[in-house]
Amino acid sequence: MLTLVLSALIPLFLMVLAGAVSFRREILPENSATVLNGFVYYFTLPALLFSSLATTPFEEIAQVRFIGGYLSAMIGAYWLMFLASKLIFKSHFTEDGIRASSGSFPNSAYLGLPIMMYLYDGSRQALIATTLAIILPIVIVIMVVATFELHRADKTKSTFGIVGQIALSMLKTPLIGASFVGAAFSFLHLKLPGFLADGLHNFGMASVPCALFAIGILIVRQKMEMKWFNIGLVNFFKLILHPLLAAGCLFLFGVRGQELLMGVLLSGMPTAALCCVLAESYSTCETETSATVLVSMILYIPTMFLTLIVAEACGIPLIRG
Image 1 (cartoon, rainbow, N blue to C red):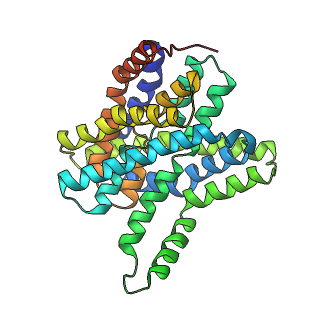
Image 2: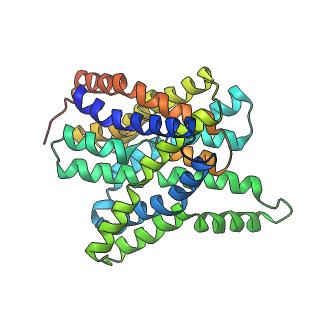
């Protein structure tokens, strides 16, 4: 188990290290992190979200109880972190939004998929749960975009006009637009040609390496000061509070057994690198978010083992296959 987790995490650390070294040795220009994050935000991640949704049968996506519990926990973690940031740091609500995304957006794709497939021996149920965990965080992106668009909105407009402006801006956001189109494909049972689905998926999988490489550049470029309290608080919400919320919400929605454990494990994944892309895109808390992602990957190892121990003590031992 430890070998698997380390084998999944070490490549992520190496990608961050490669970015740091490339900038330190001036192999790439100074604006490389901005370019890479823009590439992820506008191209690769929308391709991944669209292909994931468009190729997943709608019947599999519509797991109402799991979606309800998992989504409730994620939104709950987001707003609790948002309020904690507002009360403790007295910061602007745009900064609160970025911290809230870091405290509620799990790395379900690049890290969650291989770990869940190993833990459950490639079971179909685990694959569906992981697919949903990859798709559902688009709600966090919607809330972050809405926060920034509210900040930018023309306050002289009517309430209806402001809401319309925010909704239009969100639909124009590549990540959100691609998700809606992908969901429509799935709902209407439209089929992507195999070569196109594979091509979009492979193109989209470049998202995480590019985002992590950019984190390494940001850490070196901005001579990051480690704000340990800020980083520690966000990681407490992400790695401890979020999975606890998931356990409670999933249970309330009637999810039991291995499906409940899957939801808890997926919600307890470290902060997704996409949070750094959002922070960079909106020029808000870039270095703090980069550090949060890095620290969450380190702290994930003991918290995952703790989750499995607590689950077994509560009568939900891990059952492979």
